[in-house]
Amino acid sequence: MAIGEKFCITRIGDELSGFQITFKNNKTLSVQFSRYHYCKNRDRPFLPVSKSFPLCSPNAEIAIIDEWSGKFITSKCVKTNDDVVGWVSPDELPKIMSCVAKL
Image (cartoon, rainbow, N blue to C red; front, side):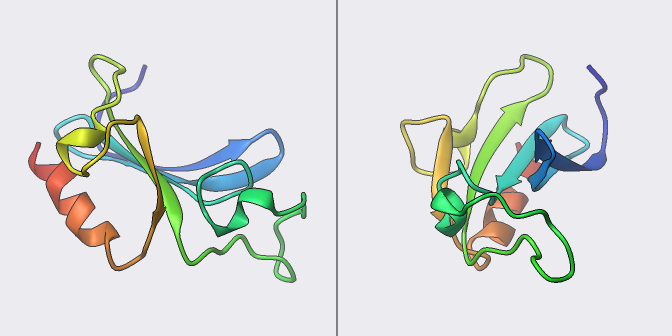
């Protein structure tokens, strides 16, 4: 497992699904907004991502992972009893990112 600061594009099979940011503290914020995730695209049919069909959504599913332990720590920054939180708006994301960076 590579540890350290990085940006990653994520995919499920041949589909793009979102992105991840790993901070200096080795905590990763996963932001997913493709089908199968808790977001507006949840029931979207498979469409190849292209200029004609960009992968966009007004909300996303997020999770926070401790890279050292591999455990979900989402509840440290977002009120939840689950590993992931769905339907997070773009306006909420900066506050969550700030929290993750400070863990």
